[in-house]
Image 1 (spheres, rainbow, N blue to C red):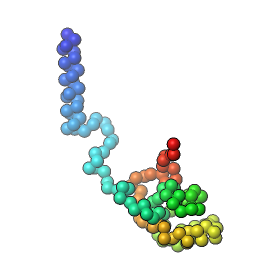
Image 2 (cartoon, helix red, strand yellow; image 1 turned 45 degrees about the vertical axis):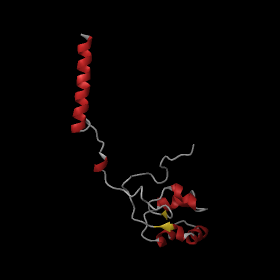
Image 3 (cartoon, rainbow, N blue to C red; image 1 turned 120 degrees about the vertical axis):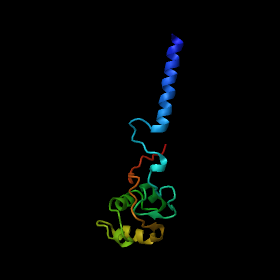
Image 4 (cartoon, one colour; image 1 turned 30 degrees about the vertical axis):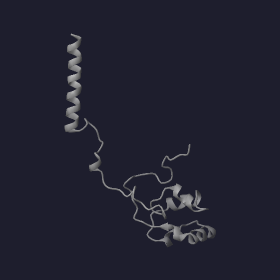
Length: 127
């Protein structure tokens, strides 16, 4: 009797694995990798800070930008030109000069909302 129960359980397990493989997981909202939209997250150029997409940690590359000025830039994004960055309300002349002096370290790309990630706090913590 025990052997028959074990065999039945094994048979049900194999059938559910086989069915899941052909039909997908039951009631799952997960997508297969080939169904996901392509993103530029892995191929992005990190030599310059993209002011429309960079995480707050990227602003550590330039002395004086992290965290306050980086947060201000992120909160007022997106930008069409570097002049829009310089015209953020409330920037001091010293902050504007710092941005102008480091203009070669910035880039502006089309905002990428595909990842829906939080730019200020994306849960990357130091341990």
